[in-house]
Length: 179
Image 1 (cartoon, one colour):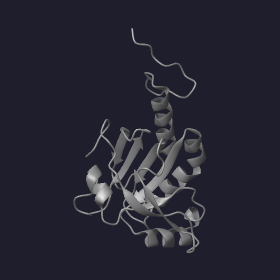
Image 2 (cartoon, helix red, strand yellow; image 1 turned 60 degrees about the vertical axis):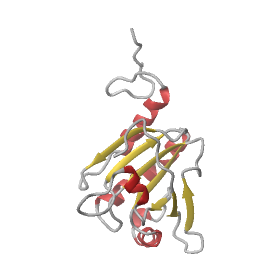
Image 3 (cartoon, helix red, strand yellow; image 1 turned 180 degrees about the vertical axis):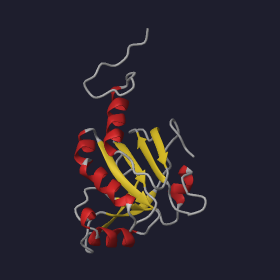
Image 4 (cartoon, one colour; image 1 turned 45 degrees about the vertical axis):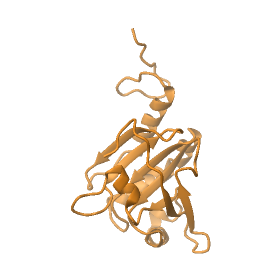
């Protein structure tokens, strides 16, 4: 699995960005948000139970991520059409503010090393990628355990200080000074 300090792989994927079939799809690649931070979070499957809670929670914080010059991207191995159908039919997903990437060929999830060995789908992996395309944070949880998007935002805040941030650091707190 790729980890901090590694270059995030190049990608070019279709994405669902809305619920109207006429404007629901776009193509997104690693250079689409050039010069910005990217939060790319993978989830296992559409039409499941834990996944929509996370997707909505990350979407609800998308303005706060944008304030930090960070684009939020959801991703799974489902097709863009499955993403569209889920967005159209799940009440919590109808007004999402974030694209849903379709890694159908599993190229990005394979390059990242996050495919579940038995299920063949992406694990619940989170990547914060800096504007130079370098992975600065990565975490993976069990497929049955949802993430805390506010914690990912806190980690982004800490990374953007370029300082030593102690345990439980919050924006506005003192940073550590090396002796």
